[in-house]
Amino acid sequence: MFVSHYKDVEEKDVTIEGVENTTIRWLVSPKIGAKNFAMRYFVIRKGGKIPIHQHDWEHEIFIVKGEGYITNGRKTVKAIPGSFLYVPPNEPHGYENPDSETFEFLCIIPVKEESIPPEEKGQ
Image 1 (cartoon, one colour):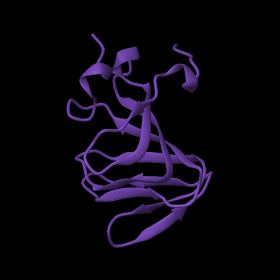
Image 2 (cartoon, one colour; image 1 turned 180 degrees about the vertical axis):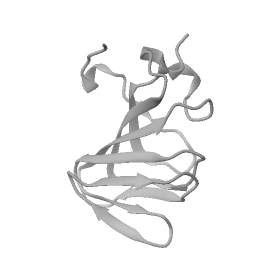
Image 3 (cartoon, one colour; image 1 turned 30 degrees about the vertical axis):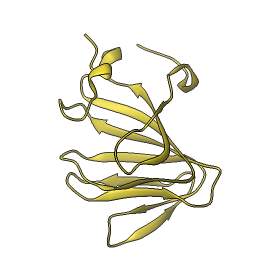
Image 4 (cartoon, helix red, strand yellow; image 1 turned 45 degrees about the horizontal axis):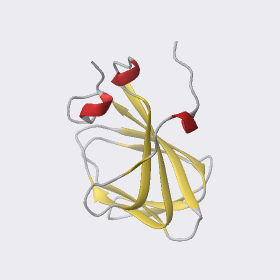
């Protein structure tokens, strides 16, 4: 078993092209022994965004704090604390926070070679 607190995990700026005012904390990853799923904690500050993109893996998302918008390019939905989302593999998706101080959410993804950065793969 592994137990920690999210504030004990390093908060890093997301540096992918087009991402603005967004940080990530890798809470659960292969680095601590996870073999099947990774859990990430995102914070999008006011005015921030993660532009529309897509991956070969699914996402499970739970909104923790603030309000923001999720889009697949055809439909945009407001998400509030307690909202949860499922993004199927290869579905375009993007996030935006125009109004809240912070828009914070958990995002769970499968552990795949291409979904986990080298520093989270462990040994």
